[in-house]
Length: 108
Image 1 (cartoon, rainbow, N blue to C red):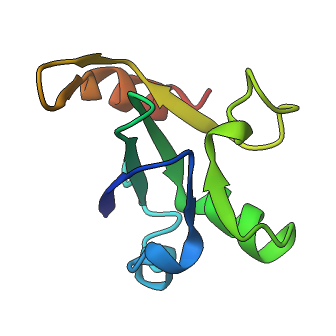
Image 2: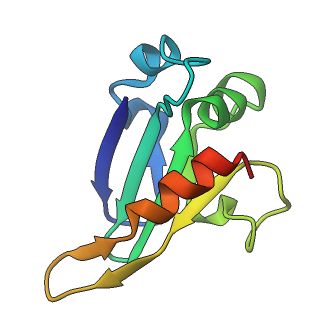
């Protein structure tokens, strides 16, 4: 189960992730990657955050939002957030979701 979001700015509040509770039901299923794919369109960045990481952020660490500041190049490596390679087109971005699937399957 994947929730896709398009957002201005550099963060998204957990209250905006409508499928959060439902995604928790899909945790632990083989070859299933519940999470959220977020396009920060004014930052030209697409990230992937799994439900496991969201639970750690929200329920363990008390985070209120997911932000670009949490990418490992900006933040101590605390969360596994995947920066999905993408190319900006005229209006939208073309993302390399094959890369995302490879990373998820590798377990890195």
